[in-house]
Image (cartoon, rainbow, N blue to C red; front, side):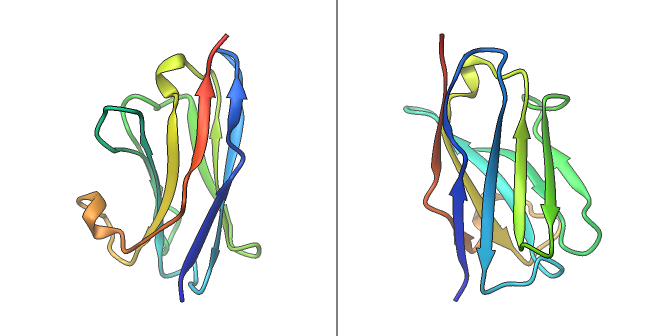
Length: 123
């Protein structure tokens, strides 16, 4: 059974940094792509970043390019999202999700989801 558990969210001031973690169990990161999504109140879910299973190819949404970095530690079966230069508009619940499809075309391609972690950027 695949399980994804996010952690690392919290309250941070604008311009600050956070690192989110997604610990995966029941799957092999060599064969699954992991994506980070976010959803703010009243807004649609947004794809933030994704990393492929086979070779670690990465993808970033336009709103986070140059500020966020996705990485993975296959020994720990963990995917990270380093978020720098945070802005108030980054405030959302962040989710990680897994898919065997690459490249994923839509969030519906992701079959397993974590419970989410809240990120709040405010002074």
